[in-house]
Length: 214
Image (cartoon, rainbow, N blue to C red; front, top):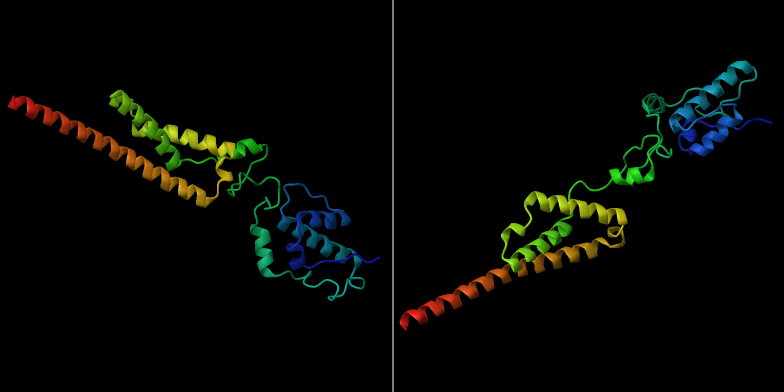
């Protein structure tokens, strides 16, 4: 029974599993470190080796093995310069951000590495507002968060929300509306504090004026 042979272009479009099946039929052994391009190259080399062993009289006709004897130069270049990890290899991953994952890196470690490096403005604003309200009610400005404290707490809570996947359940449209609503409320509360302080000054000035007349 004649073994089905594939050209360079066909091999390049196959999955790792399909290439492994072909390699097994040829007596090749692949590991998880063999990329798709590397497996295809080894299969093509094996074809050529079998042709040499069979001799010129038994070599397959060109119609049976299109582009096997002379692979496309571009594919040769890709094979020579290809990385040793394949996009379908389990060695890659990392929370969907396209970062390579080294051997031994668990899903949790990859998720942790993919967490945001800057706080979500909505989260940071909410935390800052909490302490601003506390400072206003107690009359102690020292209670307000510094810029560094607000960023640190905002980033910590941003990562906590990302880890719990709460933000993944909210559509981008909902996040935009929440940001809009929170910004409006935040500005309104700040202006309300200024308005109350101004009203108190007016009342005090009126009392002083009345007292001076008496």
